[in-house]
Structure formats: C-alpha cells, structure tokens
Length: 327
Ligand code: PMP
Image (cartoon, rainbow, N blue to C red; front, side):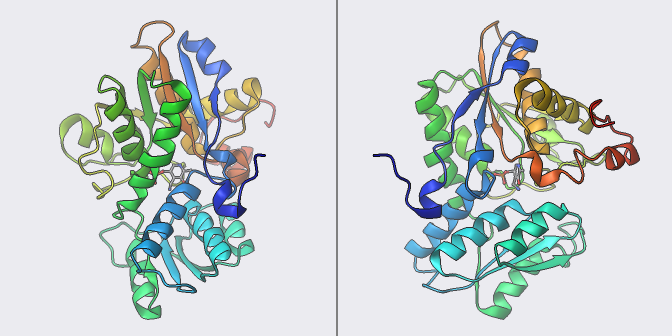
C-alpha cells in the first residue's frame, strides 16, 4: 500500500524531473525538483511543516495556539493549511504587492490576512516586524521563517536528502534563489556533506543584495524584479555559514524567456523563481563538462501568477517579453 496521511503526510517526496528543453539547449542534464506538486502548491509547505513541528516539539506551540507569520505568500499558504490540519488559527502579514492569486488562496484557507505596504526591512512597518508585533499582541507564536533554523534543517533533512537519494549523490552543481535562504542552505548542507565537490550557486534576481555578497562580501541591491518570494537584502540566520561557492544574477527577461520555453516545450507551467533557478542552472551548466548534472528547484506553479507573469498587459507595461501565443 502507498497511502499518505493527511496534509502533512502529502508534503515532500516530490519527483526530480529531467527538463528536456534546458538539457537539450545546454548539452548537460538539468534536473528540477518538482516542489510545485506539494499539496499547498509550493516548496514552502516543507518549511511550514518543519517549523511548526519544531515549535510543537519544543513546547513553544500548544494545541490550538495561534500561528503568526510575515510572508510573501507561499509560507503563509503552507502555514494556513498546516494550521487547519492541526487546529491552530493562522494570522498572515503580507506585503500588499504580492499576487492576487496568493491573497485569494490565503483567504480560501481561512487565514486572517493582514496586508501591509511594501517597505524595506529597515522600516518598522515592514511585514516581518509587523508580524512579530501582531504575535506579541495576540500571544501567538511568531514563526520567524527568516531566522528560524528549523527552516533550513527541514530542507537539509527532506529536500536535500531526497535529491541525494534520487541522484545517488551524483550532482555536479545546484542552483537556487533565496528568500529566507532555507532551501539553498539546507540543500547545500546535505549535498556538500555527501560530496564537497558539488558546486552550490546562488541565483539572484535584480533588486536583491546577495549577488554582491557572494562575489565581493558586501550587500548591494541594484534594480528591481517582478519575481515574488525571492530576493533578500540581508544575511538571514538561515543563510549564515551556508556553503555557497558562487552566484549568478538573472534578469526578469531571461527568467521569463526560460519560463515560456518550459511551458511551450516541456509542458511545465511554473512560477517566477523557477525561471530564475532554471536560467541559473543553464548558465552554470555551460561551464561544466558535457553531460554534467545540474539540479535546481521548481518552487511553485504558474497558476499563482496568472495575473502577472502570464498576463500580456502586465508584461507589456513593464517592457518585458510576452509569450507569442498570448500576445
Ligand atoms: N520561490 C518561491 C516561489 C517562494 O515563495 C520562496 C519563498 N518565499 C522561495 C522561492 C525561496 O525559498 P526560501 O525561503 O527557502 O529561500
């Protein structure tokens, strides 16, 4: 028998997909971890479950206790569903700029959604600080995904371990964008422990400060990006001491072109961070021997961004490429 137990039991154990178009383009083997197949629709189901289980094990979350988190959306969706499955009310603080589809999913899940203006981390109105304040006011648990190490530990133990088992440890390089850094750091720790020669490459969108951090040791953001859930202006606790070898910076135009090709040629409809991740995998592959294996993450699906990434009017307004079949 192969039966999964409830929402929590359905998280993880995702397929590792050989991506035909990127592999053919590069002559290398580009593999994508299919995180969009998690029950809440994204990789953040894993982090949500890992952090809630850790809080319960430590006695920081009692049965029926309120969960509060600041999130670009996907962590919130994962937490809302874990909360429903465990009987915990969930309050989500989110920047108002995030996609309508993610707001709708949070409301559908029954989360208490509080939208705040999108302001930098240095501003006390930033969604992360607001979430902490709401948790204090309600006597709830602030999940604190950015600096809660249960996030990256969950990825080391599940995402990283699954990739190792699925590839029998044969991974030349791994590319991944960063929001909290939980995915990149957790997978990097697992892969490096098995094979220190595996190259770990951070994929950074414009507007994020991590490219220069990896390359030059200083945080410096430049430009903007329409991708959601990724990009970071500080070194989170999850990112600290992560074994990162290199970084690449990917533009929205490059990521979108990859996304449109993945939809058209490979039948995979993916979210913006997957475009950044696969574009980075293709760049890194070019420096590796023919046939080398590069693994990356397909963090969520296109449906979450239909009104933006796959909306010709939105794309034209930002002077970005439009899929010819939608134009
Ligand atoms: N991709 C998407 C679509 C996300 O929502 C997130 C998380 N906000 C990430 C990537 C980044 O993952 P992590 O927080 O583990 O760095």
